[in-house]
Image (cartoon, rainbow, N blue to C red):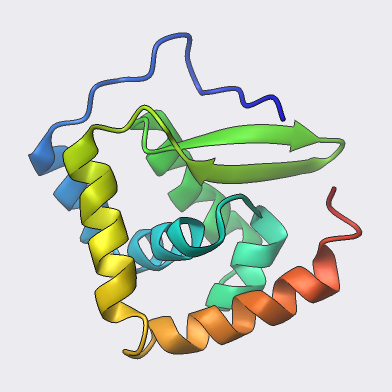
Length: 126
């Protein structure tokens, strides 16, 4: 799997910038799903979070530009995953949040919907 980041060198994110990104509900929910499932397509995230494609793409672009997620293109589809070069504190924060919020709403429902979205869309967006 070849992953291309938004720029040659991923930006170094500060704790304040990272927390600002997490402060938006759509970005937080998308990041927690990426933390749970690894790589996801925009169409899967859109369906799971019940938001429009333009809204999802706009939030993912913010995360990509900050160096929090990286992309892989497969035909017309763009797949996102958490950037492996994130600082350890940021990776640990996401892992902790994903574990602690898994049974809380709306995150629990997001997890159920992402399973259905993957089953429905995965063959089309490879």
